[in-house]
Image 1 (tube, rainbow, N blue to C red):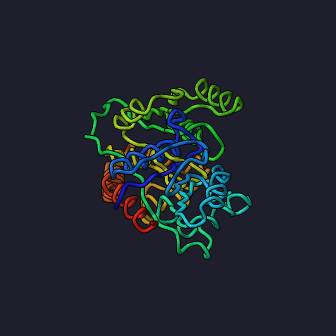
Image 2: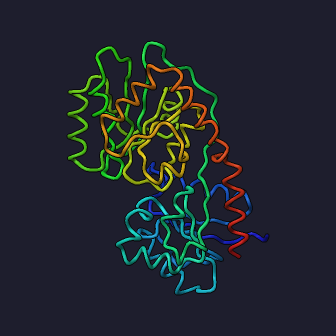
Length: 318
C-alpha cells in the first residue's frame, strides 16, 4: 500500500493523560510505523488528507461533518468511546450524524458492537487497545496494595474503592492508592474528605504515565468501578503487567474481560466491592483465579496485534 496522508482527530491531546489521548498516540505510532503521514489535531483544518480517523463521535462531530462534506468519496473512520456508545449516540444529534457519515466504525471491545445501532453495525469493527507487557514487579509483603487510576468525574464512579475501603475490618492489610485529577471542585472536596476519614485510602492526584504504570505494576490488584467505558485502557495496563483486576459489571468491562470473569461487582455496590477486595486479600485460590483469567485475556492486548488490526482496517477502507 502506498503511504497515505491521514488526518487523526482527537478531542484530547497527549498532555490530557486520559484514555482518548493514549488511544490517539498509539494509533499515530502504528500508522507512522506503516509509512503513513499522520497529522494529529483537535480539529480538522481542511488540510490535505486521503482519509480521516476521528476519535469520539460527539466531540469530533464538526470535523467529521466538514470532512464528509469536502470529501464524500474518501474513507472516514470514527472510533467510538464509552460515552459515545452508552450515552451520546442515544440522545445527541451530532453523535448520531457521525455514525451516519462514517464509512467505518471502530469499537474498542467486543460488547461494543451490540451498542452500535443495527443499521450501522455492518460497518463496525472491534480493535482492542494495547500496552507493552511488563515483567511482574515485586509486591509489598506487609500490605495488600490496590490501585485505582481514574480522573474524578461522574462516569468513573471514582471514589467507590475509597468507600469500600471504609468497610474493611481493622485487621485488613489493604491500602488503596488513587491516581487521578479532580475535574470539578466538588470532586476535590470529596476526595479530600475521604483522605482525612479513611486512613487506608490515599489520593495521589495526577501522575505521569510512566509513574502510574510503575504504581500499577507494584500493586496486587487494580479496581475499575466505572459507570460507562468504551474499553478501559487502565485494565489493559494492569493485565499487561500481570496485575489482576476487579471491575464493575458494565458492558464495556465485560467486553474486555469476558462473561465468566470472577472479579465483577454490580456497578455502585460498595459492599460487594469491599467483599471482593477482602476475598482477593485473604483467599489465595480466588486471587490465583483472577490472575489466570486475566492472563488468558492478555494476548488480545498485544501492541503488534493492535497495529496489524489498524493496518488491515486502513487497507479495507481504501
